[in-house]
Image 1 (tube, helix red, strand yellow):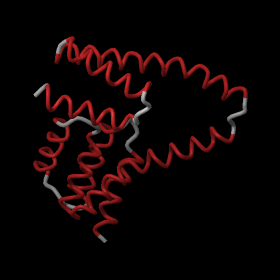
Image 2: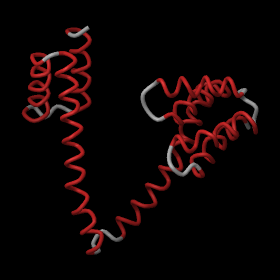
Image 3: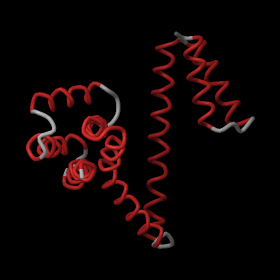
Image 4: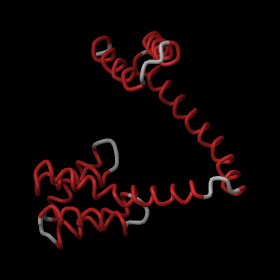
Length: 176
């Protein structure tokens, strides 16, 4: 029964919290503090502060932590799944509608307009990563990692997960 409560405590704010994580925080607080009494207001504030201090979405970190406290590892999994399930369900539904109408001229026009925007956003993100790397570890290390990554990905067709893992190992060995 605790797993069902954990699921509801994070699924419902995900559905009704229009506007993302910050909009769902008061709803999560209502569930875990007022409705189920798992945390006090002060404890909830501490969990929220910790969630804000770590990178990534706040609601999922809170769901994982509170789920773990209340239901162990499986409770953490249930809380995490419940916090992303509304978005996941909506994305699958919208994708199925999009795939159903993929030959529509309006859908083709929409995707043709979105692709350049995505390319620009990815380019800006890549530039920001390169700039952060240059400022953080210097030009030599940035060039070494960039050239090796490009060779591994394009010439030797190594899976990106292995290239990322290799870059992490490289950073741990040579940059720490």
